[in-house]
Image (cartoon, rainbow, N blue to C red):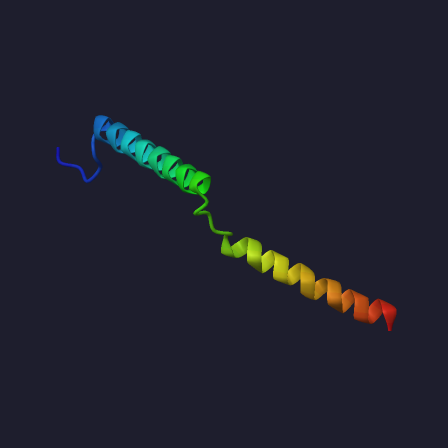
Amino acid sequence: MNTSEPSGRDRGTEKLNWIDRRREKIRAEIERNRRGEYKVPTWVLGVALALIVVGWLAFIFLAG
């Protein structure tokens, strides 16, 4: 019978390839970071900005 799902062996190969690609991506990122080419993630900048704004608002309302 023809089914739309790949055989178990094909899925295992695909998963292995995904794992290999993920590991290579992590290795490349670590190498970039060691060379000093790292960037701060956007979510970290967003959290820092939110903390600064909340701190200022707390200062204004609690001191005033």
